[in-house]
Amino acid sequence: MAAIVPVQFGVSMSLTVIAVAVGDIARDLNTGTGAASWTVTGAILASAVSTSLGGKFGDIYGHRRAFLAAAVMLVVVTPLSGLAWSIESLIGFRVAAGVANGVATAAGTAMVLLAFPISTRSRAIGWYQSALSGAPAIGLIVGGQIVEQFGWRWVFAFFGVIAVVGLVTSATVVRPMGGGLEVSIDYWGGLTLSAGVALVLVGLTLLGNDGVGASVSIVLMAGGVVLLAAFARIEQRVPEPIISMDYLRKRNFSIPIWVVTLANFSFMGGLVITPFLFTERLGWGLGAATLLLAVRPITFSSCAFAGGYIHPRLGARMTPVVGSSLLAVGMVFFALSAWQASLGWTVAGLFVVAIGHGIQLPSLTTTASDAVEPEDYGVASGMRGTLTQVGVTTGMQTMVIVIGTDITGTSLANSYLLGAGAAVLAVALSLAISPRSV
Image 1: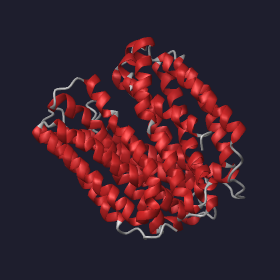
Image 2 (image 1 turned 180 degrees about the vertical axis):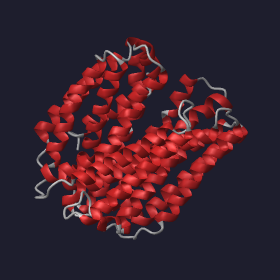
Image 3 (image 1 turned 180 degrees about the horizontal axis):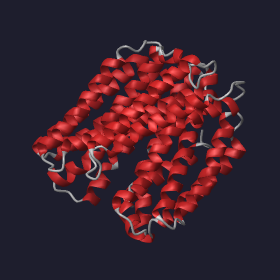
Image 4 (image 1 turned 90 degrees about the horizontal axis):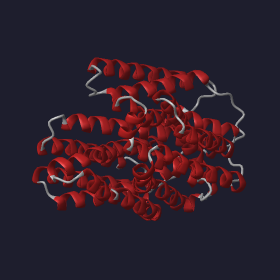
């Protein structure tokens, strides 16, 4: 596990830093912030689209091979990002990094699942997710200083070194895992899945953009839904589908994935709008707010580690019930802060949502993985990653739209209550999970 974490750790940190440096990138490459923001959006979309197919490649050709291929790609495109000569080239390199991240995520998760027996698997997933979830906070703190002192291009030199270390370590330590499925790749299924997810996420990303009409976003999302329906139809007919539809009928596979999707809607949507709570309601500067916001991923990381030990004790059902309930309560705390301009409610919200989401993620990952055969760990991890990203993007865009351009305490509170509603729905779904994780 220690060998594969640096690769994904570096990618997660670089994405966080680039989000902070969008303004500097726009000025340096003589473009607008709208175009520069696609250095982040493009990487996220590419990662979401590539996880399922990357997982399937790992199931067929071996997860170590898929992971190393992703690591090699990161070693190449990370320094090239620092040498980008135009906004188009930088977006292209970041999209390639997103693809590599998606493949590495699916392969890395599958290797962790294969390396540990069921009795200790939730603990291993807790360690793994704890390590990765701390990356955004470290990226903000360490990378932000690099951007401020040396410029955004040097960020990629720093993370390029991390990528090389990850590649060398993985190549020398990680043993071959998975692979050997004698099946062909369902290319039509892969095409409709990738295109469908991409259209839905692009439509969501553009929703609320002043330069794009709502009708365009709706058409893109509708087109994506049609392609995803075509994907489901194809998978039911082909002899060797990307993922068996039988898995989607298993409640301990499908329900945890939807719970994660709803929880990420709430958690990540709240993360995006909370800086507005600090600046518009509490009167804080963005720099000071960023430092306090780092409490959230640090707490989340610690609780993800603890969640791996909580899962065997509370069980596959009660762990996400407790976690999503805490997430809902934390979002209500944020709403109270928005109404009352209270720092106390804000700090309470930061801790409670991080604790709730942190303890439930290892449990949900373990439960969904235990419901599939080991030879399908890769594609199952990929499907979970794709739907997770749908939840992240939907939550961020929807909750930003709810607060509107004229940000008030009421508009912020309404947005947080929407996130609380998504968490409550996650609680209701969690109650349908079988108490046994097998």
